Image (cartoon, rainbow, N blue to C red; front, side):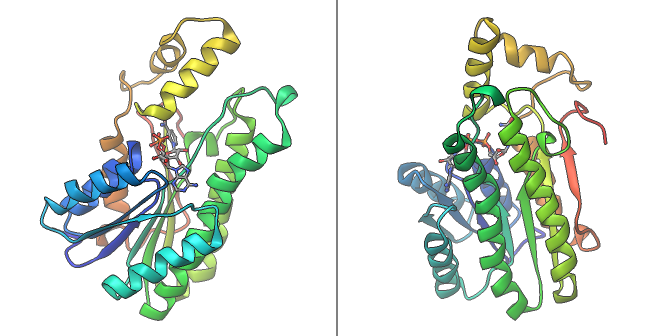
Length: 258
Ligand code: NAD
């Protein structure tokens, strides 16, 4: 197992894509720290990961809070003594027209998706610099490569993640730290259920029709699973990706090609 003995933190890992990533990294042999806001979900994922024979610890923390994020990395260091992989996965979405978008809605999405990535990267990299290396893996999106209507604020937050990651990759490369992004497409999670409902209201179509419109455009012909995304993250965390940094890889069934 290529991650034996490594310590990985996955944020927003209580459900959806983050949960699949935490379990995949555990399957790969890593000890995993499961972060989320939802304590029950954290506990359930920790139990599932521990059943794979690795050490697992849950930390309820808000990635938008500097205190929470630094408390989290301090606890990781006191429990495991190292931090090798930071997967900054936590993210939120809302669906709105720019004409109706409030500053609060903009700030909320930017706080989790962009500030959360910045804080988790900074806190993790401080440990990784001391250790002489590490892998930082940030969640962007195909919406970090292309604009989608009613998602201007979300797209801005994901473009921010990619720009931040490119700059940070150059800053920390000499410390042996790589920084890459994964860019999912249309993944079957609670998040897309929310998007589908909201797009349906804006466009006056029934539940399920909005997501189906996207799926119809996917060359590989099906919706993405959280495990599809976890496969890419497993690779980015592996020694096979040692020579890769500053990249933002689409994993989207070909929906976006660039
Ligand atoms: P989800 O809503 O199912 O899960 C997100 C998790 O993050 C939840 O458990 C939530 O409690 C947690 N979270 C939210 N705010 C947090 C905070 N401040 N601190 C800690 N945890 C927090 O979403 P998902 O579909 O699994 O999405 C995961 C990531 O993938 C997000 O960054 C999202 O933007 C990105 N993404 C999702 C899709 C998709 O189609 N679902 C596509 C592209 C990118």
